[in-house]
Amino acid sequence: MTTSLHDPGFRHHPATPGLSVSVVLFRLHDGQLEVNLSGDPEPGLPAGLPGPDESLDTAARRIVRQVLHTNEEYMEQLYTFSPANAGEREVVISYLALLQPQDTAHSAADGIWRRVSQVKLANEVDQAVIDYALVRLRAKLGYTNIAFHLLPEMFTLSELQRAYENILQHAVDKRNFRRRILASGILSQTDQKRRDGSHRPAALYRFASREDHTTYLTPPQPGNANPTPQESPR
Amino acid sequence: MTTSLHDPGFRHHPATPGLSVSVVLFRLHDGQLEVNLSGDPEPGLPAGLPGPDESLDTAARRIVRQVLHTNEEYMEQLYTFSPANAGEREVVISYLALLQPQDTAHSAADGIWRRVSQVKLANEVDQAVIDYALVRLRAKLGYTNIAFHLLPEMFTLSELQRAYENILQHAVDKRNFRRRILASGILSQTDQKRRDGSHRPAALYRFASREDHTTYLTPPQPGNANPTPQESPR
DNA sequence: TCAAAAGTGTTTGACTTACACCCATGA
DNA sequence: TCATGGGTGTAAGTCAAACACTTTTGA
Image (cartoon, rainbow over all chains, first blue to last red; front, side, top):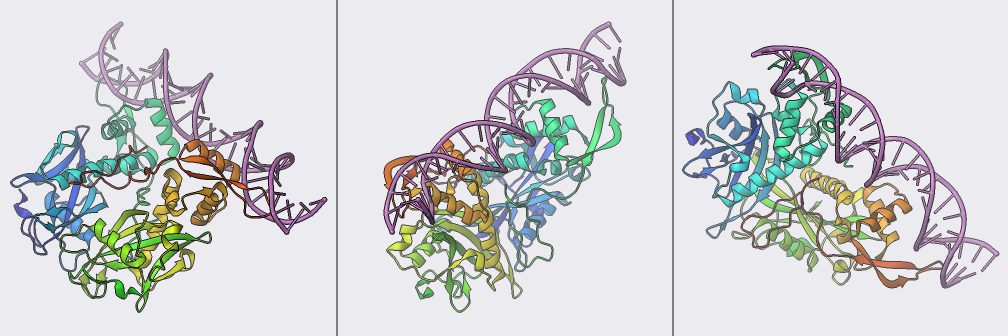
């Protein structure tokens, strides 16, 4: 249902020709990493045009809202492409957005959700953006807490591990994973447990902090009252 | 002398209002990291507008050529900003370019070179771009061979170490530095030595390869015959 | 012979990897 | 009692950091 994507303008009806914002919207669903696609007529990334006094970040958030009817959990600019399109150059600013499960739960999002591993788009730029979003997400799993934006408020360590494994596409050792995550101090254990089968119940965890450790690859925005916190690179 | 910066257009005479490319051009001079500024009337980053069928990368390279009258050694897209400018939004795509000393040697570059540590620009966006370029360069020193784009064809290990120290702004241990660099295998020792004072001459090294280990943070360009090589994130 | 930069090893602690069994529960 | 996933420790290897003296040269 991408018909809700107009105003200031959908990809195919540009008001400011040549400049658009595309968003890779990821969620974790049944343990699988999925990407949101708007299909008209070809499936493609949700996209739109920034309004005359709208920042790119704001436009990206608006596009997500139009698809989701709720807000994303995390958003980050990826890269700006300038593909040739019939002799003219377009400029496509791409964003990565992550969604917590509950964000989709109470709102049937527009578009379709497809497993990332199974997506192969005709649009070369959209496909490159998705591929790059995955590279970035995988890289950041290693040195940030970015994965938590894909998980619900409370979760078990096994769920967290499965998220890592599904994104990275390889198995990780249970003991080493738990030791590393717990040692990093980004989790705090709740006193609750989840019993969901004929086996020992699992302890539930949440973030120790809602602060991001994910932002040092993106610059603070000039003229912004509360700039993105900056970590020192290792 | 930024009067050579027109065609398709300099920052202050936009042909396509609202979209421009800015380049942070770094060189190492007398052991100091310097940035190129074009001063008219305020000093600012060299910038320009992409032509109608010019990619952003190509525009960035052209801007460097117009400043330098020669080509840069390395170039990478940084980030896209969208500052408010009198109620209208501009879009500024920023690039980092690195220069080998000999690139400046035989060509008096336009603009002025200023030590990065001493630069404080009135233009908020330009300043943010420079700051971010530094963050990126410093981060990449740690896990890529990017520093070599700032050094001449042949150099001593002490020169290389001084380059690292000047960029990182802190001292590094000589023995650990040499061990790490040599173990990484990116250098090969030449049979030449440099004697330049009343002390033991230093062995000269060069790259083992002109290949980049620097690119995995930027995506391969779609529709590009020879895409940027992609490393797997750690 | 002196000053100045080049060059060189070892030890320690931290972190990463590989690896296998017992625990708590519901059916 | 059995099947299922939850939970735990140790040993080996790799990597980073700290640290100081000898070598070669020209003046």
